[in-house]
Amino acid sequence: MDLNIYDFYNKMEQDKIMLSFKGNVTSELLTSVLQIMESKMEKLNEPNRIKKKVYNILVEALQNLYHHLDKQPDSVPQGHNTVIFMIGKKEEDYTIFTGNYITNDNAVKLKTRLEKINSLDPDELKAYYKEVLNNGMMSDKGGGGLGMIDIARKSGKKLDFDFHKVDDEYSFYSLNINIPQ
Amino acid sequence: MENLVIEGSPKTPTIKFNPEEGKLLIQGRSIPENSIDFYKPLVDILEEYAGNVKPATRVDIVLEYFNTSSSKCILDVFKKLEKINEAGGGVAINWHYEEDDEDMLEAGEDYQAIINIPFKMVEIEEE
Image 1 (cartoon, one colour):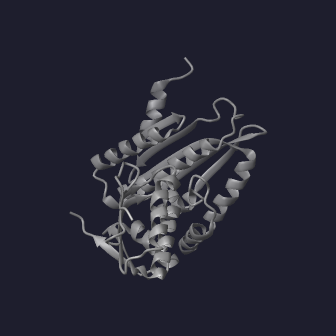
Image 2 (cartoon, rainbow over the protein chains, first blue to last red):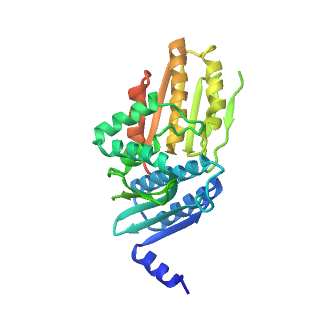
Image 3 (cartoon, chains in turn blue, yellow):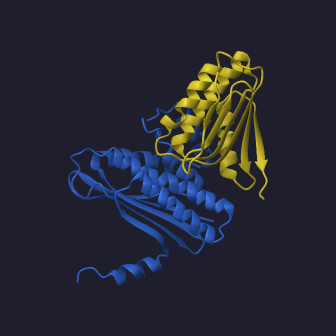
């Protein structure tokens, strides 16, 4: 047998994964995942401040995946339109992991944006948020590039990302968002 | 002008606008994937109200969560309110936030810095 589910289980247990998903993201799925995470954090008696922060960041991270899939061309290869995400809590910190395929062209653009966000200190990040909010063009989905700035601001951490080149056309983009207590 | 009432859902807030009394309430969660369609009726009725304002307009924003997709729409709402204020609508904005929710307070301050209307930050005490 190639796949040992017990190994998977142990690995996820070690990393204190609370929830994981691989597949296609729909609006209904996001609603369910958010409800599950909300009740899990309720049961853990998390302080209101942490619950709200994790929930807010999770909304942005998952909606990024949702909008990303929305933008995919029809020619996207089989399997490249699925995503993965996991939410874990190790010691006191929450971590949200997301992964999705992205074209190499878009990877270059995204990397530039993420590096710009990471180069800013908290005050500069606040100013940049207001600038994009006030002057940035709104996409037809209403996002307009604020999501990653918001994640960086609310988590108070640098964005931890990676682009793994898969072939001449695609890369796999992964993002780990650490949310300290 | 007629009242606008939109009931809340798990991803969208309750919206109540009464043009006769000059009162607007936005309350709950605003985390829809696509927020432009959701906010359009409010933006439209505020545009209409800007041409027929009451001398005082009270606005209460009582949001628990909002996503970045909503944040631009909320700015559009505030820009309409700015226009109403300039037209003599005497707009006062109350931005409510839970006492330990620094992110929501900061979000209110971000809007305050952009919008030329007096904001009042109102702390909601925990039950």
